[in-house]
Length: 191
DNA sequence: GAAAAGATTACCT
DNA sequence: GGTAATCTTTTCC
Image (cartoon, rainbow, N blue to C red; front, side, top):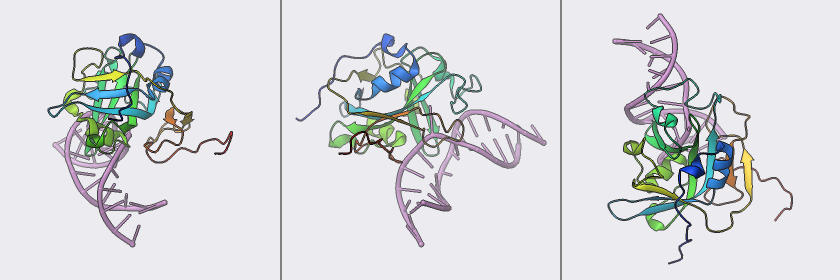
């Protein structure tokens, strides 16, 4: 099988670092979810950072019933429902997290993980996974990237109405799995 | 208790 | 490119 191999499981120390740095380094990492019909995996190509004092963050107004997982330890999954789908985040430091927006499917079974809701559907992540940890024995893990990642571009985040100018969306330039709107790639050298 | 808004997506013109 | 679907959480009266 032409499977892009992945490295070791990322532990708490990986997530217990500044959120922007974690976000950037998650690109190329693989999320693996054990399911009833075997493991499913997605290699991340697009994420967004949500910070302290960030009006676009669900944690901005303090702890609520919905966002309590964002205040859990590093490596906690924060899963929330929006409209008819769910989206997943990985908590870094208290009250900060990285939204998983898109990735490349590990095989045909994962379908199309291009978009936060689609990515969760590809991995079988549900609201039941909210609050679980990816650094422990749970069914979901993150494995470090094993190969080079393409050029990374920083652009404004998608779908928010506050702090829209902050460039906290990180994506692999020109990767086919990056969701829409597709970021413009600065032309240092046109290809 | 009621109303509005939403870190989206699928389908329409 | 624009809009409806759809339902939970949050917020306001």
